[in-house]
Amino acid sequence: MNALYADLFHALVPETILTVSALLVIGFDLAVGRRRPLAARQTLAVFLGAIGVVTALVIGLSNGAVGSVFGGAMMLDAFAVAARAGVLALVLLTLGVVTAAPVTRQPAEYVALVLFAAVGFLQMAVAQQLLLGFLAVELASISLYVLAGFDKTRPESAEAALKYFLVGAISAAFMLFGFSLLYGIAGSIAFPDIAHALIYQPMSPLLAVALVMVLVAFGFKAAAAPFHLWAPDAYQGAPTPSAALIASASKLAGLALFWRLLWGGLGTVAGNFTLGHGTPGWLSIVAVIAAASLLLGNFAALAQHNVRRLLAYSAIAHAGALLLGLIASGQAGPGPLYYYAATYGIATAGAFGVLAVLENFGRCQDLADLAGLHRRSPLLAATLLVFILSLAGIPPLAGFVGKFAVFVAAFQMGGIATPAGWLAILAILLSAVALYYYLMILKQALVAAPAADAAPVKVPAIAALTLLAAAALLIGLGVFPSLLLQLVA
Image (cartoon, rainbow, N blue to C red; front, side, top):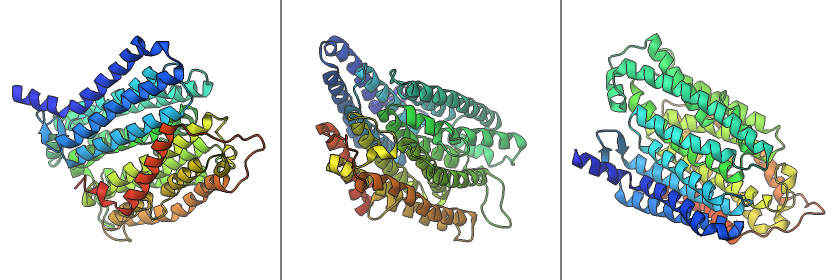
């Protein structure tokens, strides 16, 4: 038993560092920071939080993959280590965005909540049983609900938090109900035991209900259609760093957990995509959700004039492509899915970082608010160009490599004349639609003339470094994708 607890402590070192860092941020602000200006308090809180994240990242990578931990409750394999590293990198980018956002009245509390959410994300990446996975999701979700409503000066923020909370509570109920049914059917909460028990279980009505419950909860968390209704309002109303965290690190951690659950625990009831003699399973349901997300997300984005809502519907469309990667990962492994999710998170966090800087110089909600950005701040315009082109999947940026890897993995499942192949073709065709609304953003930022009263934008040093680092990552990982893919191998 002592050896078990020693392994547990070793596995939880990154989470422990983040928790201690969050407490230190709050304690230091109470002891010293309250006598300083708000801007200085915010910078200090971000600095302390970033030290904790970097320390957790370095230690998490140095610990490496050690296999099953604490009686199989957690799995520290190569995928878990890579997912943890990706989550922490995205959290670090989010903290950089915090320095660019308008100053909050409680900066230490905000940074601490970001770190507590990161603890939940890390546990989602390694959870190997139903109970731990549910607790990790709820720890992260509760922090995100508060972060979404943190701006007390804007009614939109309170509305975003309320809608996010209500939908999140409903999805938690679906998830817990589905998990309880799986436990009743398999007699265990461990993913490997569930997989072993379901080998001998035919597809019964009770098992079908359990799968539907789990997939509905997953659709809510991933903002996939038709469970997406919270996303546009949450992205529009939440503070910009909160929206960046929800769109990036949260999505990567959720995909890591559900990839392990669906393929590691429920892979035996995935079903078959073969035409003519397919078998029922969750693959067909996920394919329908992916197709709906691709169609709704891309076409709804065309009608948006609010840049945040446009990014929200773009995220729904990307959720469809990520679900295609989830389907293909049963044969190709998690590499393409992880690469796509990580690079998408970098581009999205960077785009929200640009919006955060602009918010300090006036309103930044509509597409027209980006007009003349190339004259107001060439740095912001250049980095926004990289982020948007990566989201659009333009080579040689990382977004192109991610889409290419997912589409190739889908075609390898059986060729073009299969449901997976058709879904990949649909995603490729809709990429042209996505290119149009992404170019709408770039047209305003790079072509349109600035408003008469538009002032030049001075980018804070930390924010500039964050945006340049994110842009460099997208370029570097696009040219050398093996740097990221080798983490999963």
